Image: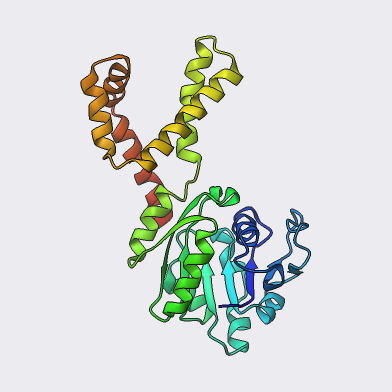
Length: 267
């Protein structure tokens, strides 16, 4: 597929993170990208071929594929349904909005070719994990193109169940937030022991990064890794035992349940 991609919110942090990764990896040419203007500035100075337009209707005139990258609560303010239907074309519509269902997108846009995807902040460095799902009307050729597009931002998996996408929105859409909470706790403990902040930060983040790389490259079940350290009965095992006894997993589950409730509007 060689089509023009229009990103509503393409000058925002997530939309620009995705589009800049796509451009940097040559998945689309600058001339194939159209974005809406933003009060926060223009993020495509190194790609002068990118087109920036003032409103959604102008973008829809130029774009073959439409990507919506705005906050979910802003979606109702977008008057895109009429513009899409005036064009009388069933455009491929991609949404990066958390919690906005395929059914709602079909109703709002007039298109039955809908893709929901949930990248995270690591898209800015080409290291996002992006789950996505599509309606039945999206063709196989389009699905392959979408996978290529999203893989430019890191790794991506197509799902058959929209509910699974919402679950992964909570788990992986958080990006660095949950790991940052752990890292911050570890660093603060080091600071309380008098470790210089630069040393504490470098030590903790390097350890986490190395450990994640080790887990990604290994075949071990993570529970088995924990069990081996517990069985070793050393310094680390004492720390693990104390965290487990104080409800570490239950606390994490409670946090994820709270995030899920917010996503589903049941909190």
